[in-house]
Length: 127
Image (cartoon, rainbow, N blue to C red; front, side, top):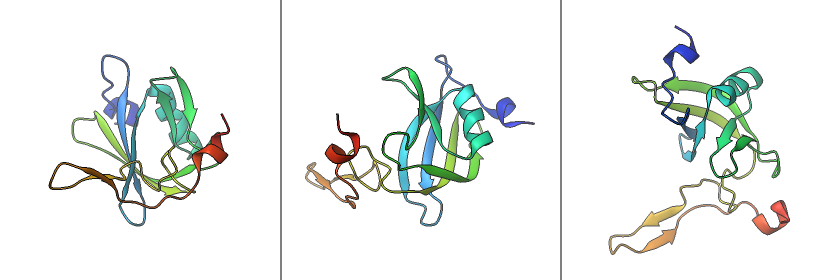
C-alpha cells in the first residue's frame, strides 16, 4: 500500500496534519493537506500545506524562513490524519510562538500563554 492509498481525504479533499518536534514530541501545529501538498511534502522533505483561508498551496517558511524538515511520517489507522515529526527552524506559529499550542486553559477557565516567543511577527511578515 502507498501513502496515497492509505490517505482518506475528507469531502473537501483535505487531510489533517499534526506536526510534532521530532526530538521533544511537542505538538507544534495542526494544518491541512490535499493530495498535491502531501505528495510535495514527501518529495521535497519540506512541509507543504493547503491554506483553507487563502485557498492555495502554502510552503511552511516561505515568508518567515521558519521551515519544517520532515523526519518521520505516521498515518493513523483510519488514514484520515497524519503525524509529521519535523525539525523546526524558528517558531512554528505565525504569532511568533515556538508552538501554535501556546494558549493554556487554567482551572478557572482563563487562557494564559505558556510557551516560548521566538520572533516578532510584525518584523517577519511586514504586512
